[in-house]
Length: 86
Image (cartoon, rainbow, N blue to C red; front, side, top):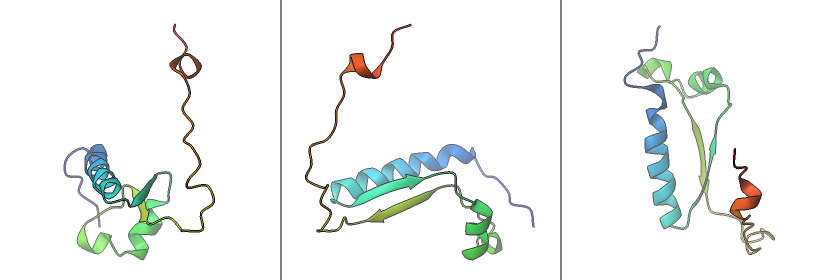
């Protein structure tokens, strides 16, 4: 079976961003994952039977209360340290 691409394949990132924003507003953590073997996901989830294709993976969940790093301050670098003006 050949999968039909509807729209631009990277449009999935629009939906992904929305899901991540809503999850964050609900205090739910997310982590997008790319570089996975989509054919394996397609096979395991039987996506080809529905003419679907795995494009991105998003881990969603609550962090563990025992996560010792969750209350550490965020690391924020200055613009000067982050960027090089060319």
